[in-house]
Figure 1 (tube, rainbow, N blue to C red):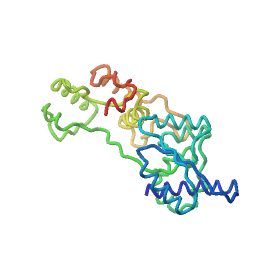
Figure 2: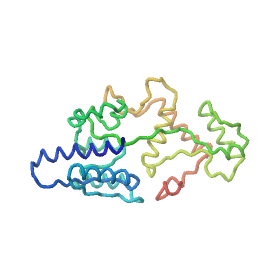
Figure 3: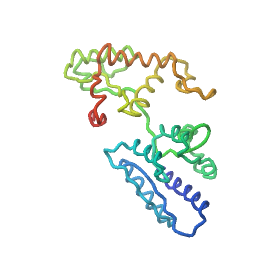
Figure 4: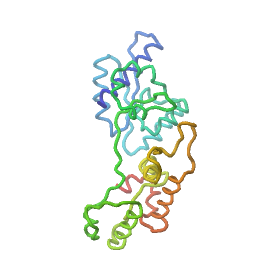
Length: 266
């Protein structure tokens, strides 16, 4: 599925390029992607080149680089590739800044587009326009725990906390009974973590805060088009952080400011 999506994306933009230039010369398309997706992209590119006769200029962002900062810098400098692998969180800012081309006219002619769940189609959209085609996604498990440490601490297994208070209490038991455990309760936070702090961190807490089942976004009011800056869910999530990092000291803050937080915690 992911491979087909990529090939389609390249093909659709190539159609746009042919329409604009009308030149019989061989078309060259630049594609920018990160090293973790190298195998997927390169196999799709090879298939596309064989099928269309087009030439692809491959721009690989090596591991160790700040991939998203590199892409933003390329956008700002006007040297970004024709097709770029970006994370979903970049769609809104990039499209609002005028960096992305609307794909509405292309996807409506693509039969496979309607095989996507509506939620998946929306992931590449902003303000009712499509700017990206989802290649992959993940399901976030909010709580992971180290079974062997829980058993050493005498915590009844399987662990089934009923609320946030029980999560905090369990972490305090770990802290007391297993002093060698550096971080009894870990949540990524701080700007160094990027989307790890937002999508995986605070947003997960906001979704888990008490509230009506029909109000799960809690960051943006799509009816008014305005961001939600304060709400009971946001305040409760922030208080949960305060309990973890400052009141109960269940997770050290210094490593959150390491030059490479992903490497520090790996």
